[in-house]
Length: 166
Image (cartoon, rainbow, N blue to C red; front, side, top):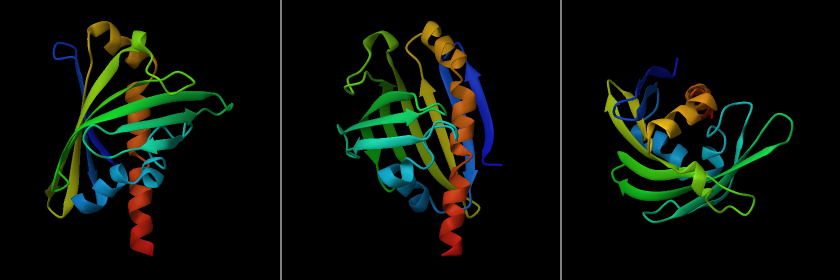
């Protein structure tokens, strides 16, 4: 199982996932860096992502949409705020977008911090999402964020296994 643990902290307004992968931190980093690989796992299996823009540099913007089972689209955006090499830490703001790719202000944004560390020949990825307030945290929970992230991260093993079979 990819996801080792998840923890929701309503006082700190955080949702934390710890996942383990059979791949180097450099290889797991590529899954964030390359938009074609990122879209193969970002989003739950029933809501795959398409990245129209992915400027993976500090200050860079990413625009994507997820497509639901009935063809409906859920647009989103990122602004990358920190990339700390070697591939160990990524920080970005993530939010909902309108049909033009512009942020939807009333939904706010979520701050994400991703760290990668090598442990016993595997990579541990810790993802901490910090919410603006308890109302936003509850809204995201009601929309299925925790289950969605668990499902999304569960797709990473398949991508890493493809490397082993090549």
